Length: 370
Image 1 (tube, rainbow, N blue to C red):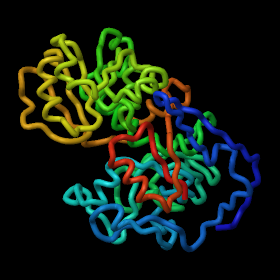
Image 2 (image 1 turned 90 degrees about the horizontal axis):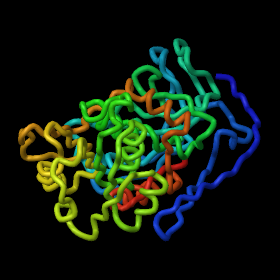
Image 3 (image 1 turned 60 degrees about the vertical axis):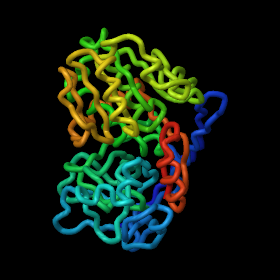
Image 4 (image 1 turned 90 degrees about the vertical axis):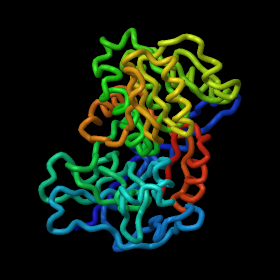
């Protein structure tokens, strides 16, 4: 491929997010116009974070030099992307620990991650929707060990998720969208919880547990965008963020008393979205009281002992079809939902990112910048 360079205007931006009495600054390393003298040539090697055995991220993650992915003769529908931002999700550290090894076998060495944003530097011969220089974001179809914790990633333009970035968001915001937003949307709108048409949800009530985290913040915003009333559960320090940034209608502080003690109205909610799953069995028991008959309890994590209690339904978000993403992308482009990245770390700090993610106390999204 011929090397090409392009000089554009440098733009530095910061965004302030309030989290209770604390101010979190979203450090935007690059925006849509922040790449100066960008080189579209692809080097032979790249920096990447890898693991060669399962274990604690602190013990097994390495920041190493690897061969850069290339387009093979049969990669006619694939693109090579220069990664600008890689999203960090809880599933990443769980995969490194081997929790999902039976379902998601990894190559050796494996590169973690799924979410990315970046710039296309090579396209396969049959790619028609994307060109070199396009700014894009998305995710691999599933974590496959060839993730975006690296300077470059190869994705299939049809089977993986590749979406053009709107000019209104930064690379760091885009890099944290896809997996979390899709997890929230699929759980809320594809299991007969909420209708995909907001008109039919105007009387629906949704409870989001873990509302300030990476998936929870999307569940709040998407439920609101779909016309429902949202009660958000989080800690008191995140109350301002949940009510004023995410625009939840009501707030429950789980640190004050158990959820069972704080809810007194039976058959109150149409959907309960448990974004964390740490106390999923007790939350499912609670759902038998506060979830309406025929209502939906949904979670991307954990499991319950029984799912046949009365007519209330439990669903586990196991599949994330990329075909559902255009609705989310449209909302992001129009600004009716907002990606919120609260911490950007260098790729070499992946261990720290996983430690923060595993704590379950992060607000918004963490991303890595190669």
